[in-house]
Image (cartoon, rainbow, N blue to C red; front, side):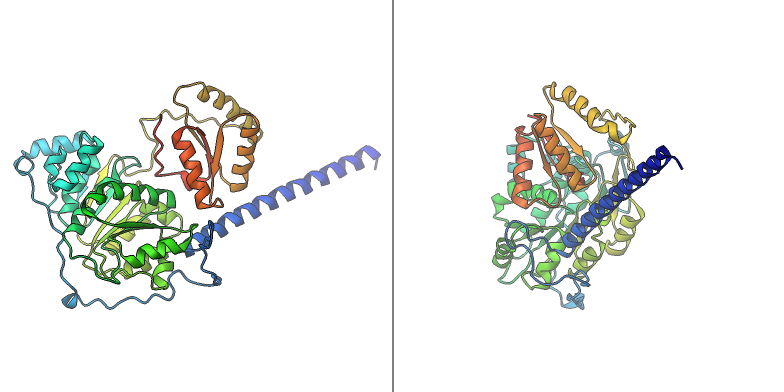
Length: 435
């Protein structure tokens, strides 16, 4: 064998070793990502100073120490959940006009005794303290999901709402929740929340809390937002003082239920927001454990952007005689209001193409951009390169502490860092208005 052939063999061996190392690094990165999600689902994540529970989670089932209560409906305190009185203009509207409106808004429905949609906020029949906040915020008219969803939610019916992110779902369940709470007896010492809103991520939970703050303040409705990756102390104190609304990610809520910091005996209004995303993230065991702790005659509202079999099964099991609202298609599809451009390229071409694209975007007046990347390590690498090249970029992913994530999102929203590099932690539910 000649010298050149031996060198060629050595080069091939070196290439194989390099590919082997690269594959091993990718496997390790994926493993770290999976471990992070497991910790978050279990309610761990002590970032930001003392959020962890300090006990071993190995082999533990989520909510393993929680026992399902034996619910005797005859002994439970009765509660009211139907507050809807149709506006005369809504009740007397000809059926063909109702169908024309639903068709124009791409609303399809399943279920019995479905109330007519409302066209204006006044027709929804909200109390004055809610209407005052609506007028203050300058909303012109309800979105499609609100127009049809409010009459159903205010009637005390279980419902499934399927609509794309950004369609106004948060107000669809928050305003009826406030009316529901104001018609219940006041919290006593040791009572848990009246309304529970479950969300997949802390960012979405915090946005829901902002809406609850805006509309609940006038009637002194207290709320708290509980999630992993932040200290447990302040969250626990809120729960112990008593709040009417709890907005929570499933893992951290399970932690507080197991430790006895709160309970769900008073909960009569349950919301599952972005149910499809929660199931994608593996939260189904926690969701089931949480629902077990809530009285079965509660009102349940489930919201989702898609309608896969897993979400359908959950609805069939936990919702009773529910009405299903669809706005738009049931299938996951691209938003037709947005120009979608797909560029199929080799891995080594991506960074140069991204640089070229950023030059075009940053030359425009409205230039906020989100760059999604699969792994946390790659997010950090790309962000460093962008900043080295002079781009105003910031990043978030699951390993960032909560204060750091809050700061990055604020910088992005304000426009100080108009480029956000992220894993799928930012895939849904973030509000970032162009300025």
